[in-house]
Image 1 (cartoon, rainbow, N blue to C red):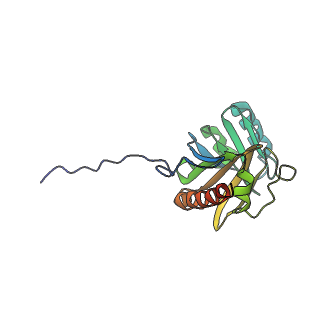
Image 2: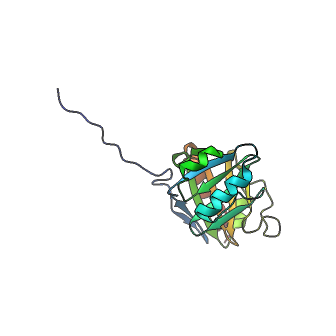
Image 3: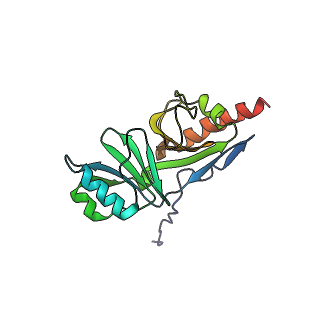
Length: 185
């Protein structure tokens, strides 16, 4: 019997799908070193904030907000938890919050360019004008039929987080919308 061994190669969720560029808009994949969901236990929010601040210089964000320091971001994810992106959570936090490693479960993309709002307006059912959804804003929403987390990083850059299993669909929808916006000339 021959010695058969499988050779597994780790690939990012958007491997071979990005970067894509049409006109002035470009999509690239972001590969965070760590993504952790953090849900503070009842009465422990202040302690979680102290721990996060001491370790990473960030706190649990307000509803609809994203906070960043250096390469670490903490974003609101729903009424009871946040996502910490870019740093590994210390095990001591598990006495204060439910912490789950989400690193391999998410596709993370940045979309940027002069016409990024035109592209996203075709896909996302939200008012993304800077006066409504400014830098540091984040929301759970839909990109066509796909549930996502959308954050505004700056005037013309957004970050999209989608479940890893939806990466191909997200890139496909972005590609079509970008192509259509670029075709307007």
